[in-house]
Length: 324
Length: 310
Image (cartoon, rainbow over all chains, first blue to last red; front, side, top):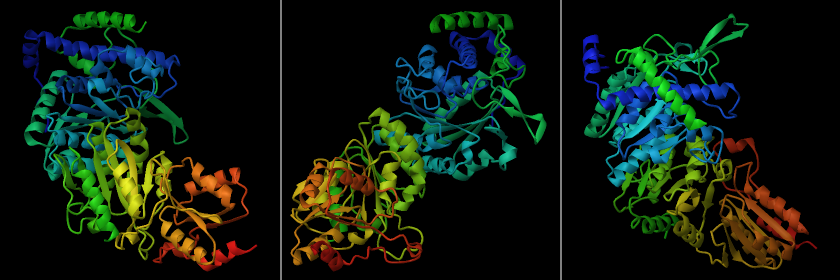
């Protein structure tokens, strides 16, 4: 089960001894949020003809993966990949150009958003098909074994994709063939417009891991330092155990709409899936939710809002210059 | 030598010196090793994996290996198992092909055409798999086309499917002289005649050979071709032959309703004036879905007589 999150005194202690790298993590999370807000504003403006799935609320896990990955590791992503792609590349221009399908884009305008990968940053393959990337990641991991490479394969999936047979098949393959890997289930509780309890029985991933004979770790509350510490531990354990580690990340994809139809005349809450987020209030410190569902809320435990706002302003100005 | 032993020897010679090759599939290195197809294989610094029963995932794994510059061959006991991997044949391959990978990935399913399998298992719709995402595909039936295709394509960079029929595997290898081989083994010519052109698709060459022999005994000299590639190609040599004979017989044993045969025929109708033609296909009967013979029923003498008529 998940490790306990820091208590307040530990956080204060952390704050006091925060090193440059630690502040870098905070900056990265804020930057990811600001970059996505910029994309969303252009999306609302009708700039993009391709579908884009924003990932506001997913910043902590993306930064933890990015910070943990080593030179020979590989990352396999899903249709919702903006947070990982941006975290790995650290700039917005190339990704924006890809969204505009320009030749200067990250993949020369040939992949768009839902399949965006970046070999230079070890994002090997991205699939818009539910659970499709799992087995391709297995193949990559098997290739590492053949080549005697020390790399760990990170495969991101979601609570919808774990309903597919390939999820089970791939975990079985990773375990059976002793392939160091981390399978990350981003559990946002929704698949398109249906909540988990509207479409299926609960899947206890800790029991599934136990049945297949490898470790499971739950991540909650979006604390970036907690996530980073756990992700580094997972990488170590994947290598040490020569097999997969299953990580379930409970998170909220920020954004929503109300669907009005005959069944729901007063409107049914539908969490954000894709497209522009219409109702988004922009603040100087770009926090959206006053709870730990928002990774930026967690940052307040580490730095004063005034400092976070100052960091945000600098990053915002830099972003504007970059994408001018 | 049995055909399966012959193919096995060709595979062995192609894989044993290829570094870092992964050979995988269910029972590739256990039991009968797919009826002898994969027995005794060895690889250099690679892996041979008796894989789990997860065809969808196994197809994805082949593409993942490709993305890591590692070549592989996925042997499959029955072509219908490949139905489970169609997502990867289309969606994954459409991404992987953009990267022009240096590694090779070959899927080698056996077409179960020995008959009496019942409503399942006997799928032979090779054209459908190839058509769905412009996938390179080769079938073979005899000593020489098998040698050419395996030596040229089994571990070549890129992705393809290659297959042969189970019915032939336990028979003596069919040794027939080849007159012409298209440079990429897309089609082969076995004889040159003046009276009629016989063109065989999928696994139909043995029928074509029998028909050619019956016709020869009736005084009809036939050109004989097999189309081995399941993607539409440039058939100039065959078209020239048909322009000369003005008579065409097409034999296709596929169950596919989406065969390259139809593209070929429309090409011929566009470019040739035909005095006589015959297309021999599998009948669409409900009984095809019950345990039944899987062979084409052809009255060779009737066809020969038809082409003898003035």
